[in-house]
Length: 248
Image (cartoon, rainbow, N blue to C red):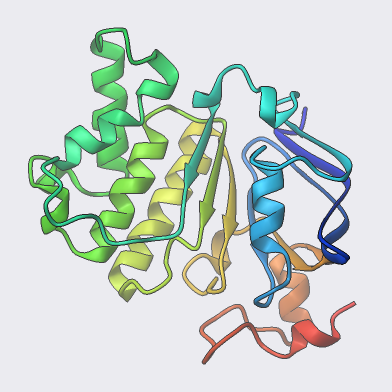
């Protein structure tokens, strides 16, 4: 299979200080991969490089076989940024906000057809929000709002879904529903998922691989291998545990 995302010896620095150094990774279709690392490890910088928001200073990145800055069909990549509370005055319903995710696939100038409406309904169903589809998004809980943003990214039927800390600060039930949604994406759509997170407890059993980053890649392999080393992917009091400091 052709990888949906690759990075080959990618480096990027802010001034003289390297944020990421010679990072190489590859994600195949249908893989569920987590990217973890302590604060300051370069996760945000790497994510920006992978999404084509900044150009790597060394190395190359491809997304769906193309330079991410020149990707022709951006609807094939879904992105869910870090959670934030929406404006309480925002007059948009769940269905309306999810529908905006379809524009990347259809284009804003075309009227939605049956296929579009089915994709929107399916995305809402996939995150278990059918019962609130007509409610204003601003009235929902933080966990529900985060699932709306996942549905918005899912509406374009992406081949690659990238999520940045999707379960940070949400309750356990919302974490479970997010996990179920991501599993649905991998199983039914055969989409690849790249999850950037400090907290993997909710999804640890579903992951194919874990990539540990601390400027460079310290580990890239199945979560079982980390477990065999006595590493827990569950809840930690503050940052990721000290084992990251020694892993190499």
